[in-house]
Image 1 (tube, rainbow, N blue to C red):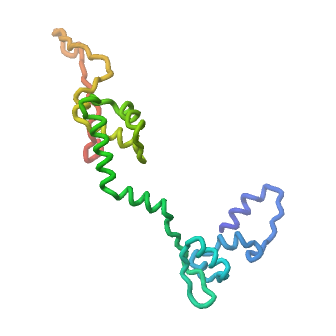
Image 2 (image 1 turned 90 degrees about the horizontal axis):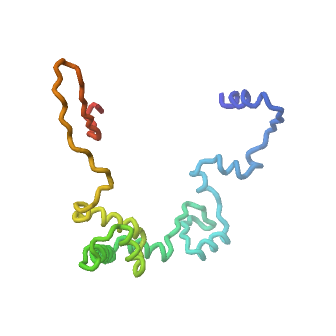
Image 3 (image 1 turned 180 degrees about the vertical axis):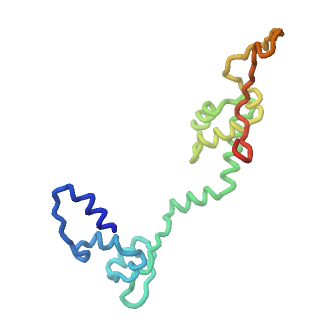
Amino acid sequence: MRQRRWLELLKDYDTNIQYHPSKANVVAYALSRKSGMIAGLKVEEEIIRDLERLDIELYVRGQHGYWASLRIEPDLISRIKEAQNEDSKIWTIVENLNKQAHSSPFSVHPGSTKMYHDLKQYFWWSGMKRDVATFVSKCLICQQVKIEHQRASGLLQELDIHVWKWDEISMDFVTGLPQTQRRH
């Protein structure tokens, strides 16, 4: 069925389709095989020594060895980064820096951009800009004092009382309400 579909697509072109055995086309042959069949490939001892020199663990079976699985262990820098992400002392230092830079009497609650530039002069950590913006957005004092950059809405105007019904119709639009269970 699939071959027929391809033939239908290619019939309008002047082509010459030739069969190419899969064993001769090594790359396509390897890509078309399932990953479970890789375990049957023999690995030469020179390759094993190269992998061991690179600190890559190789599980070997028998004298000549078959490539059962290959696992690369993280290098020293990756392990240090993982340990830093899990270290609670580092994150308490970051929290204290944010508090001092934002809530101290000398800083007077700067916005996230100003606070980021002030901290950036002396400190740096991964995701610093995001952390500073999150900290400032959670500050209750900043949220209460925040200036709205919108034009003040006008005062309510009284409507004239008309003699006839349906002489004038007024509507109030309320938007931004959450959806109901029926998605209305």
